[in-house]
Image (cartoon, rainbow, N blue to C red; front, top):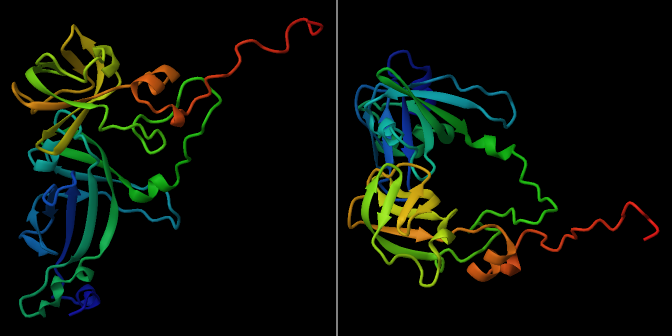
Length: 286
């Protein structure tokens, strides 16, 4: 049977929705659920039954930011991913709609067209509501409407450090350190740590990265206490003593760090030679 046959049938249709949350680059970095009463196998992915629901998908005839809210049990794996701190990578959502095939239907129902994609986007945030978690999701078309960042005539560099415009060598600015202790949003490293000859304060604004349960975890380094304690932008949930962590240099977005710390002055995005004296003075005769 074709999809339309199920859609128009009075007794053979078994409509279900499939929700695939992807949180990392790995082949198994996803959670897959169905709102049906039994597991659904589709394209090699097993969708487990879960009390999951969503708000209506609104279509207005143009690409715009259409949000949906997905409600899941607070004890589900996807809810636990946002329990204390958002995951280090973007969590995407793909919603498929289709019908559970009947046993006497041909095996061609394993093909992708039988569960077409109804909605795609990413999870922005999660809120707890008693025994439920509500995930606010933004459609993929939302980012297509946003204007790009505007460059200003300014001294400091506006480019994102290690981004595609900055082009600083992230690998050359990275060093592997060993954790001696971790609590809250602080990690203490075994000394010596970092790149040779680099002051600890040069890591402020940089990153700390490590492997977590949901893939690579990243936190911004807010400050360095003493000589070996890093204060991060969020809690460290999976780090313990003797674990490896990658520390990456920061940047003050001024010409000196760009040239001396990253050897990247050719890509500096600011205008460091803006004159500080107004050529049009109070007395136009001088």
